Image (cartoon, rainbow, N blue to C red; front, side):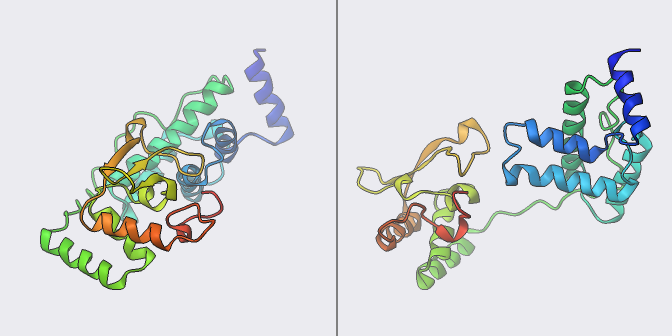
Length: 233
């Protein structure tokens, strides 16, 4: 009997066939970002939702009908096409990894699915108008606190929220011919892509906000916006 089948039989007789939850635990344990709570949040959410829909079945007993049932229920709950696709991608990644690493001779039930036609398309976000931005920036200067400093820096740098919320004070460079912020990858805050590492000139209210952040920083302060940091993350 091949080793994989022998192992499956052993698990069957012990009554401990691995489940999708076991596959998730294995995936997070070995993935380079598995310990990152922000990364692990989506896979966990997807597995919980799938188990809630079809039950805590053995991993090898999950069927394509189970996956379709889960997607149909997601549609009924109002999930958009994009949301279902993201969740399916996460489940597929877990499944591919687990089957490969455990050398299982079973098909991946999460691959090559068509999202239900009834799934609604996500409503596209509209950009702020110039007047709306001016209003927000005016209010930022009026309130003049750390939350408004963050918003002001976002408004005139076009950065991602986490890039600004996770800034360290040393990433704000004011004593330079061109004041700027450095967006860098560090253990407490990863970036979306490698190309995200960059320097961004500080202009307009972003420069004003950065100056306020530096001026108001305490002696041993490390991060620009401590209220958004939990420990070093």
